[in-house]
Length: 474
Ligand code: NDP
Image (cartoon, rainbow, N blue to C red):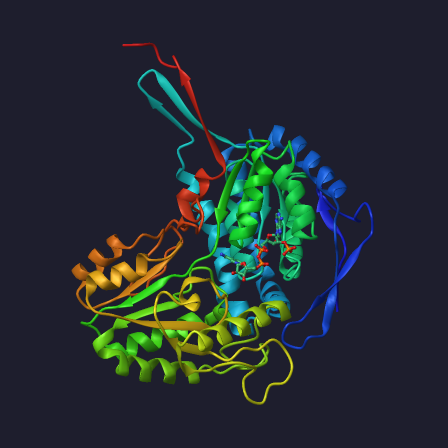
């Protein structure tokens, strides 16, 4: 049992001002796995005051001081990486191989990337008579979700630290453990008091208090669209910057010139990773209509081949994060059947032989782009395959979405694949796979407004100042 009932404020682990606790449930067993504290607005005020005080010195720290600190954080993160991965598995149900693999690797990658970007980042640039300075925006509220906990916390904390900002992290109630360990890592690494603070608790209390707070200069949020909208409204009165990374319904286009079976299988398996709980998951798989039969066989075989079970065992997929998420996904599967989509793998209920835990069957439908299951973010292992007539039709379907976060193109002819990628209205496209910590990540349309990762991730936390007359005219 884990007992994480203290917050991290002003360089110390402290009790909440008013004691209140909540149980955390292990999604694989439905058993209580530990306890956290739920904070109040008073805890937020305390954390913001600490961050405000610390901003005076941290905002003028040197690049060398900040690179040293990020290096120390990276070393301490690596030392406790296994612990972090185990916490991720326990809190949100990712298989241990994933929790201790890609989950923690992403967090580490963002810290290392921020460190490298910082070494050469141009905080000052002279342009004619003017000096353009990039200055830290101030006190930042970082509000994160449960689906990739280390990715989403580190992608915010590392650039915020690197740019000289101070911050208050509000981790998700569903996945609070890894954030608590991360706070310990930052403490041990020597983050100065008040630069990083963490308050656990309900989003409607802690997140809203941060969003409305007059001494918070910026909010960086990853999560659902409705909460993103609410945060913007809460932040409006204080005119603070709000960076939003919201949901998606990303299209994966398999071109006609490539191996249908291999690419459909890869896309299907990839989509089921992390139980489909990835904002950029390729949850609409677009295949040539003339080759639908081939695609159906490959997708069904791939989905049926995804082993589901105890995340501490040797399975490809664990549970989804919570009972409520399980119920939402079940409703979508029922909706898909009711609206006439063809079920080719999976379906309602738990996988055979499992009667406990929030396990979902890897599910594949063949449908059309106007169906609810093709339009709304399900956030579970539910894939919709849609046939297209030609390239124009594929691009049209891909772009016919309220979202615009990710996109995927698989094809042999790189020229064609590149052309298709340029026509897709999303913030990121992966052409025949690939991975890059320096590639900016964020959405078009209702998938958000900011860019994280790499050098673009710094801009979220910086103000631009022009000092005109810095150089003599002429
Ligand atoms: P939410 O958007 O509800 O939660 C994300 C974070 O915001 C959590 O820390 C949450 O706190 C906090 N929060 C909740 N309400 C407020 C508020 N009024 N003001 C400020 N912060 C708030 O996502 P969920 O975790 O509930 O997931 C719901 C859906 O969101 C999923 O089904 C999925 O579709 C989508 N989602 C998308 C993600 C993405 O990366 N694009 C990531 C996660 C979810 P609390 O701890 O109380 O939940």
